[in-house]
Length: 211
Image (cartoon, rainbow, N blue to C red; front, side, top):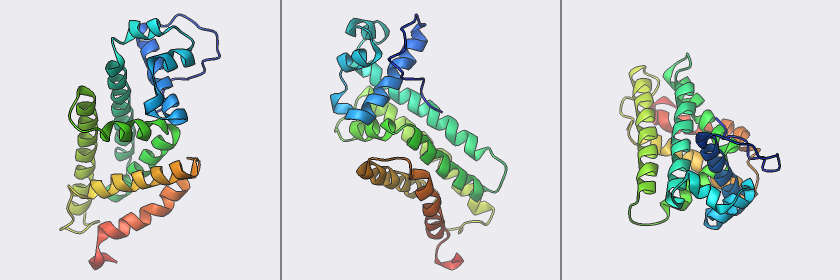
């Protein structure tokens, strides 16, 4: 699920508050891809959209509210992507693969997402934004853990596989692809590498007894 268009060269039109908020979120993610989260000021957002800084604050009371909206969108959108993947017909293991590829496709389409996520997690302490990130990651891991448990019951994975830790490896593999793509400055090859990587993940999940 992609955020709304960020074409700020188009003529401005009157949008509802919800539409404008979504536009702001989309441009924050675009800016995160282009210059990094540290350089995202409310003035930079306003300049990109083509409005005054005051117009930004008519839709969000402060910058923290903007970040909350950004992570709220990520949580909802990635949740939808995962739900679509795991609700497909097929075995639990096939749906785990579908979820992995869907997650990578989402990141490839929205490269600003991991940048804002890593940026937020590098700071100590707690905040409403960090709580939103924690809830997002926790919910995602829980849904994956249930899928791994299904694969164990179906006999596709070893009965002693740790269903709580398996999602950590899953998410870590996605993060590895993100870092590799960031170093290369190109997300276009992420899906090809993801398809090559999943059999390696599967080999690890199955364990020595099933190789």
